[in-house]
Image 1 (tube, helix red, strand yellow):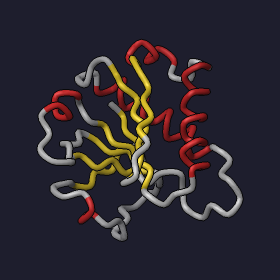
Image 2 (cartoon, rainbow, N blue to C red; image 1 turned 60 degrees about the vertical axis):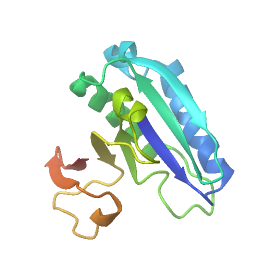
Image 3 (tube, helix red, strand yellow; image 1 turned 180 degrees about the vertical axis):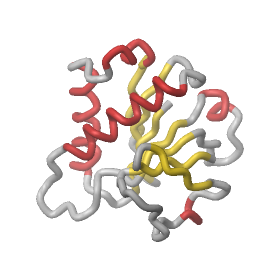
Image 4 (cartoon, rainbow, N blue to C red; image 1 turned 45 degrees about the horizontal axis):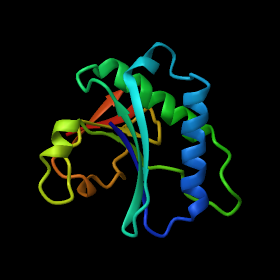
Length: 148
């Protein structure tokens, strides 16, 4: 499952925009041959922070799941943000497998991979790694992917 969290306090228009961009990408079959891996899309609105989850059939299909994540990243980075929005639509997309979600203790889930919203040719030391413990930086195709 690919998860996009929306922090508490962000305008409702941000969640609406993210939801619409993902729906349009799915309807337009923007995920190519990997469309067969997608089995659902869920929007959870909560007071502590909301999330949009794209469910995939097979967590072990890592290459396909990463391609889906990259398409999501491109769509969200290319979206026209509302006036006055000074932050990106997302910091990172997380990939969590269903088994880890079912076995979680508390509110945290073991994250398999992260797809960052920023790109660079050098490692960005400014990223606050403390927000996601036990993660390490790995440069992949000039994009940061955090693997836990």
